[in-house]
Amino acid sequence: MDMVQKTVKQIEQAVMTLPDNEFQKLYDWIVELDHQKWDRQIAEDSEQGLLDELANQALAEHSQGRTTRL
Image (tube, rainbow, N blue to C red):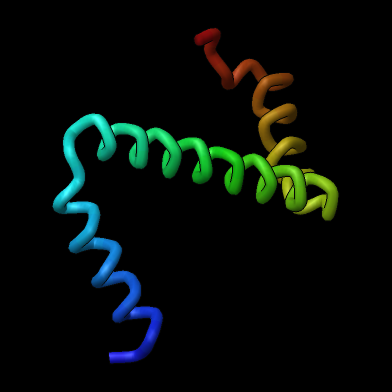
């Protein structure tokens, strides 16, 4: 077992022993961290123009009346 796998296993075991309120704090922190990473990835992809084609497709479908209001 490599060091990362061992560390993950240790973290998993530690998480299993957390009281409910501490588990909830950890969960909330992980969710927020995940959202921040997602936001950074979207921003990077946008800056690199990787979302332009998707935006153009969406605009074309909208102009053709193939979208619905949410």
